[in-house]
Image (cartoon, rainbow, N blue to C red):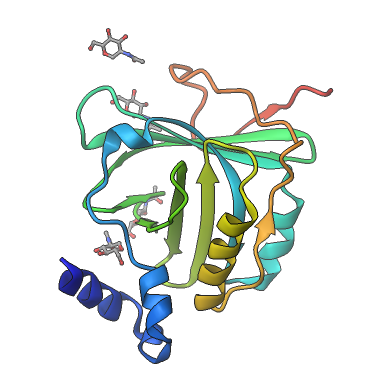
Length: 197
Ligand SMILES: *[C@@H]1O[C@H](CO)[C@@H](O)[C@H](O)[C@H]1NC(C)=O
Ligand SMILES: *[C@@H]1O[C@H](CO)[C@@H](O)[C@H](O)[C@H]1NC(C)=O
Ligand SMILES: *[C@@H]1O[C@H](CO)[C@@H](O)[C@H](O)[C@H]1NC(C)=O
Ligand SMILES: *[C@@H]1O[C@H](CO)[C@@H](O)[C@H](O)[C@H]1NC(C)=O
């Protein structure tokens, strides 16, 4: 098992060859994922990405969520995202199928891998966009705010990836209301006006 993880790491991340062992350990992909653990809504607590110009956009996000639900089979899962920007909610939803600890979406242009985190009620998603052109690294939790040590672990993981210091989301900012899952208009890139408060 360990050997497989090590091989997967070496194959997928040649840059990590020169990195200290600690980074390999910090960035190991999750083994088998339990789809029941994924079910429901997660709030983004922190994130970073490899393309610095996009960091500004990430930092100006008020809030973001990821939701998973599966009703048909273990492998076919609905993946919905919301993002609040300038007090406006943006939604996107996809049908995904999780293979091992990865799934792809957006016409397979984004390959997402669940990465290990010691935070118990978190999921850590690493988005490989357009075959390595960019990497997005997002930590989601059932909580809106994490403990200092949990943010420190994430910061260390981000440093291993040589990405800019993470944006930590403001827990007081409202999340977007849950989209009605059956709404056919709720397709990709659908925009709805957020409630002003
Ligand atoms: C899941 O499927 C069952 C039966 O197939 C159905 O009764 C239930 O309403 C579905 N739940 C959701 C959330 O779609
Ligand atoms: C996902 O699959 C369901 C059922 O097959 C379908 O009704 C829905 O439109 C699909 N959603 C997307 C975003 O492709
Ligand atoms: C999906 O990707 C394939 C190959 O990468 C491309 O030919 C096709 O046009 C894409 N479809 C959409 C809807 O973008
Ligand atoms: C996605 O990335 C994982 C981890 O790097 C890899 O094992 C998997 O083959 C990739 N999937 C696709 C469809 O490229």
